[in-house]
Image (cartoon, rainbow, N blue to C red; front, top):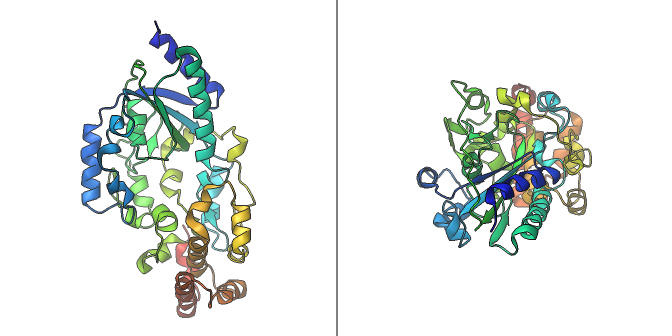
Length: 359
């Protein structure tokens, strides 16, 4: 006979040993979250992320995705790099590229999935074979709602998960299981009257508290969107070439975030502040080599050049910037050529075009 309370205590201890800062257990009833998701989809806020609709209710009904699931083990791993306070300085430097802090190191999917699998193996050593499936942002899972129900934090007005102890600089991973583990109490919300995240968003993507229009979100525009970035949103992107952190950087709760001890999440290849003209000169082979094992790969080489072209269009008008753009004016990609042409026209029309992107 398995003592599930004792097992959960062991799971928390094993999780800590594997590098997770918090582990909790949630049930699988997500009715209110499902309604919120369907309303969000009906509004078209998912943009070109058609997979959000294709998965149907499997995202909000864990047992449909993994039959037999009765509990979800949710785990948190912090990823904040050292020197987060310097991020605003980097965003204000139009000659340099800003990459979302989570993407500077090794691809988190690989790190968390491996640790969660080891946690499964430790559980199985006690219980014997059991029904389970491991996820790390890799399938239709309402991971923030499940993490909230597991007591890991609340969903903030920017739609990210927030912890009173750690802010929002962390990754989430899940184990769907048929083990009837004791449930944790859901986390309560503590955003209060604060609206800093809504006010700071460069593209006004947070259209209301707890409601994000992904079609305006810089993370969507620079990572998920495959075609042209809407012209009216290019200038607000500034020098952000992969993702955006503004709503996290301004959040008061992130004063409690601590730098990650994980070497895997340390910045690689000087991408924490590399010069835009330098990155724009990368060949596809260099891009693939220098982003190997990193989340940045998701944007693809063409998307990478598109994003940097926009950032160069927002950069200070100077010979090196104009030369870099000119070098790809006849690029093989029509997508890249179009964004380069926009950037060059922006400089021609307004030599100080980079100045309005400073915070």
